[in-house]
Structure formats: C-alpha cells, structure tokens
Length: 435
Image 1 (cartoon, rainbow, N blue to C red):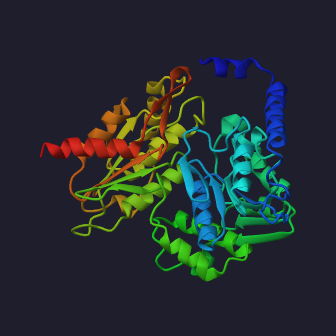
Image 2: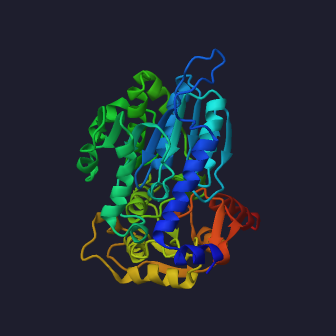
Image 3: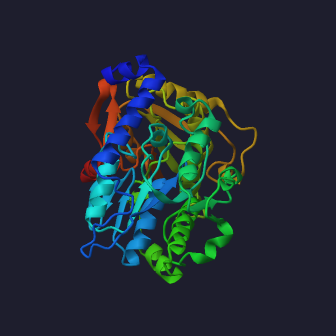
C-alpha cells in the first residue's frame, strides 16, 4: 500500500473532509474567487465568467467538448476542462492528472487563468469524487447539466443513493439553470431541486440536431442534445448549434476509430456496465461488410483496481460473453490490487450465461449460443497485439477501459506512460510490416 493510501486509511473522515475543504477555500481566496463578478476587461466594465457544470455517469467529457464547440462557433471566448483535456481559448493541453476535477487549488487557478484570458464561458466536467472533496465549492455555477445516472463509485460513496446525492449537490448550489435528461430514470429526483429555470431534453428532441452529426451511438445523440440545450439556454441560435455539432468528427478516446482497414479497431473509455453495453451494441451493429453478416467482435477489456467498484467486474465479464465472439481479459489500472485477481473477478462473470439471447447471436456465423473463445493476458500491450493478430478482414476489435488516458496506475502509486491508441498503431505496424 502506498504512503498516500495508508494516510487516507488511518486518518479520520472528518479530518480528511476538513483538509479538502480548507484547500479549496484557500485556493479560491488566493486566486480571487474567479467565477464571481469582477472588473478584468480592458474597459473596466464588470463581467461575469459564466460557469457550466456537466455531471452524470457517462458522457460528461463529450458534452463538455460539444458545448465548448458550440460556444466557440458562436464567437465566444471559452475555457473548458474535462478528463480529456484543458482548454483556454485557442490553447489546449492534455489532462495528464488522472483526475477530472483537479484538486490542490488547480481548479481555481484554471478559472483565474480563464478570466485573465478574457473568457466569457467556462465548461467544467464535475465528478462525484470531486464533489465529495468539495472541489465544486466557491465556484458560482450558472448552469448544471445531468447527462445520465447509473451505478458507479458505489463503494466510495456507500451506495447508489449517496452517489446520486453527491451528484445532486451541483444542482443544489446552482440556482439559475438546470438542464436534465428526462429519459433517465433519475430525472424526477433532479427535477425537484429548485432553480430559476429548468430545461429538459429527451430523444424526441432529436430534430434539433444536424443531419450530418457523425458521432456513433444513441448515447452520443443524448450528449449532443445536452450540449445544444446549453447553447440555446445561453441564447446561441439553433442554426449555430447545428453547424458546430455538424463539424465534430470525433472525441479522443470515445468510440475513436484508430484503424479502419483491413479491420476496424475502436478505443473507448467505457468502464461501467451501461457504457460497455452501449459500446458493444454499436460495434456489433456496424455496417455489415459482406454476406449480411454482423462483424466478428474481438474485445479487449479489464477493470480498474484500487478497490473501485469490485461489484461490476463480473458484470463486465457477462456483457463480454453476451456480445463478443473472442475475448481478451487484461490489465487496466490495478493500483495496489493484484491485477490477476481483478482479471479473475471479470472471468467469474463468464459463467453467468443469460437464459435467452436475442437474434444478434443467432446469425449464420453463430447458429446457437456458446461461450466465446477467451484468454487472459496480463500485459496490456501483448493483449492488444493478440487481438490484432486474431482479427481478420471486416472484424471489429474494441478496446475499452482507458480511452485517451495517458497513464497506467500501478502498485506503489506509480504511473506508467500509456496510450491505448498509440499502442494499437505501434503493434499494428509491427504485424503488417512482416506481411
């Protein structure tokens, strides 16, 4: 166990909470409460940094990116922060913190820099862990957005209800505008929280999206709707929202197609059961290449360590069995856990075969259900290489869990430089150089 984790384990909860709150308060003070009314413009006129908080289980980073694109298209100066990257106007840099909502005063410093750069809007990804550590405090949020909600960080929060309550604190502190996915089963819970204005969105609103919106998946339609609703709430004309969304061709590490021929390789961040199933559904239903067959799906997956959501590991395994024809279980971010044990936990879900399977598994290629071929390969690079070696023309390789993350977190608090996308390109080149 790392020293950091040991200290966290032996320190009383109230002391840890006080420590986090103190750091946030000091940061806000040192950087001058940057989200509040101020006079930083050349004319000396008062201006307010409008802060938009995006929360939910899945889709947060994508909604941040799409919202920033819309506001930029409308000729506003914009800052944005997500698990993928930081951006202040035209300058952007990769988020290498392995932390979506930065702690230790970094978030307040980011907002201060946004104000000094003349930004009118700041779009922030807001996580339940960040809220738990008070990182949302002393930020005057003007808009709160809910993408969706499903079980995640259950052990850390002590149950789904407490996880949902943590998410709701963003809405409780945002008094102006709430934007909520009405198709989510938790929508009513969030809708009850008071606000000056409440805006809902659902799949029936799809007509506000451009016909050339190209991100894959139904969930990305929801993400685009959330971003469009933010734009409209801020007075951006609908045609500008559509134009911005139509220009988006991809989000790093989110259903990112890394190789197109002779087979397809997709890298995605999916690490919860709901997100993983959505990704598998999309991959399984990509346009058939020949003989009206669905693509052969080769899946590389793992699960995060550090005691995080152990309950979901067999569920991820079960989903892989349902959707994939070949499975490779590998290492992801083990932290201080034994990675082989994590892989065994995933494997335990393979035996949870559903009583009935729909037509997706009863194709000419697979007339009757059988447990797919699978293997466990600890080394993630070797696992990716094996998947590429197995793939044949028209197959789909889907690598999940890390997306565009730049690190792999291992024992002793160490971080190893890593990028699933770069690894795919390197191993693909090695294989095809020999052919």
